[in-house]
Amino acid sequence: MAITIPTIDLSPYLTTSDSNDPQKATIIAAIREACTTTGFFRITHHGIAPLLQSDLLAAAKHFFALPLETKRRYIDTTARKGYEEIGSQMLEQGTRPDLKECYFVGAEPAEPKEPPYQPFEYPNIWPDASVLPEAVFKEPILIYHEATCKLAQTIMQILVKGLEDDFPGLESEKLLQDFCQEPCASLRLLRYPGPSPSWEDSIEKGKDGTMCAQRGEVVAGAHTDFGGITLLLQDGNEGLQVLYRQEGNGIQGIEGEQEEEVWVDVPSTPDAYVVNIGDMFERWTGGRYRSTVHRVVNVCGQERYSVSFFYDGNLDFMVRPLDKADLSEDGHEWTVREYLMKKFEEIYI
Image (cartoon, rainbow, N blue to C red; front, side, top):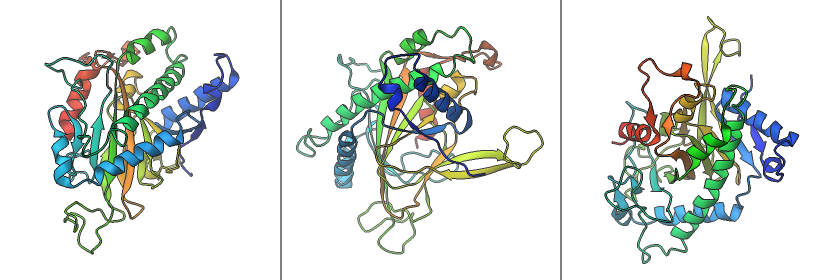
C-alpha cells in the first residue's frame, strides 16, 4: 500500500467567514483524518507570501555563511536563543549528535519581560548590525514570525474543531483563547551540511572547518516533536522522513498481525508547509491526534535549509487530557513551560 502525506488546499477555509460553509467542514475533516493516522499533513494556499518565505531562507543563508568564530558570539546556552552549532543536540538518544546548525528566535512581546527571566522568556539574541544589517536578518525574521503565528492560530482552530465530536461539550473557543493567549511561538533556522569536497568520512571536519554529511546519512535523529504543532518550511531539497507503522496486512490495529515500519519521504515543495502534531497535543487529545516519529536524512547530496516554527501555546496552560479518563495513573499534570523544560533537558548535550 502506497503511503503518502496528504496535501490540503487551505484557501477555502481562509476566504470565507461563514462557519457553516461545507468547504470548511471538508478541510476540517481532511486535517482530522491526517492527524489521526500519520500525524503529518501539508498545506498550500495558506496566505503567507512566497516573498516572505524566500526572504527568510535568504536570512538563514546569510547567517550560516558567517565564519564559525563569528557565529559562536551569538551562543547562549542559558537562554537557548541565538546560535547552536553542529553537535549541540542529540534528538535520538544513544546515537551521535545531530549534524545541523541552528538559529533560535522566539516571540518579541510588545512589552519585553524584565529580569530575572523565567525559562522561554529570555530576550532574543541578534547579530550586530555591522555583522548582518537588520534589513537582511532581524526584520525578515520578525515579519515572518508574526505571519506564521497567525497561520498557526488558524490551524489550531481547525484542529480543535476536528475534536468536537470526540469530546461532547468541548468549549472550543475558550480552549483556544486560553491556549493561544501570549503563546510560546518560536522558529528555528536550520542548515544541514552537505558532503565534504573530499572522500573523508562525514564525522571528520571538511576543509572549511565545519562538519559534513554524506548522501544517505541521518543528520537529525529519529524523534517526535514535543510541543503543540510544528510548521516546517523547506528549501526544495528533500530529506524529511516520517516513520509509518502498519500491520502486516496493511491495516493498523489488528491484534496479532506483525507490525511493519516504513520510512516515508515527505516532498519538499516551495511555498507548501509541512504540519505535524507534537507530543503535548497528543497527550491533550488522549492519543487521538498522533505525534509521529520522524528524522532528517541527506538524500539530496548537498546542504539543505529549512525553518521549523513551533507553536506551543501559553506557558502557563495546563497540558491535561481533554478526557479525564485519559489521565495517567499518577494524575500528574504539566504546564506548557514545565513540559518544554523537561524535554529540552533531554535533547541538549
